[in-house]
Image (cartoon, rainbow, N blue to C red; front, side, top):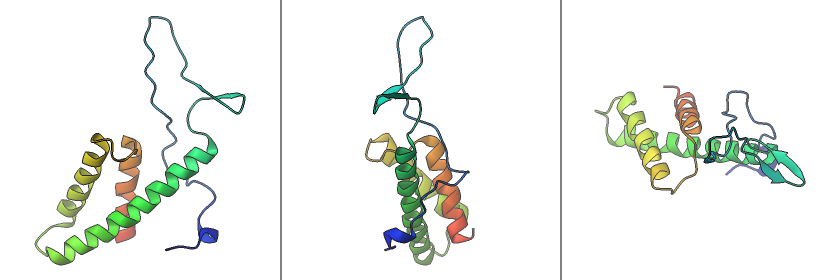
Length: 119
């Protein structure tokens, strides 16, 4: 566990900056925005982005630990196979609406896992 005072207060530049996905029917051009505190916002607010980053960083740390355990238990597995299994598991959780992680965030998480593991 990390002390909250040591958590970053900024989001790294390489973290995806997308936003909530919107689907708006009709032939006319539209802009998907949300009204937050009297202002129209397109994409994530800074607080939402920080929360998503912290969640993805936590997920990357957990997946790195998982991959380490699996590598020790299955020495015949390649690093690529181990990472692929972790990525597939994460993708299944997202597809089953158990986790709210965008495709870009999933890719970022897996790159972060590789960095944490030194793979």
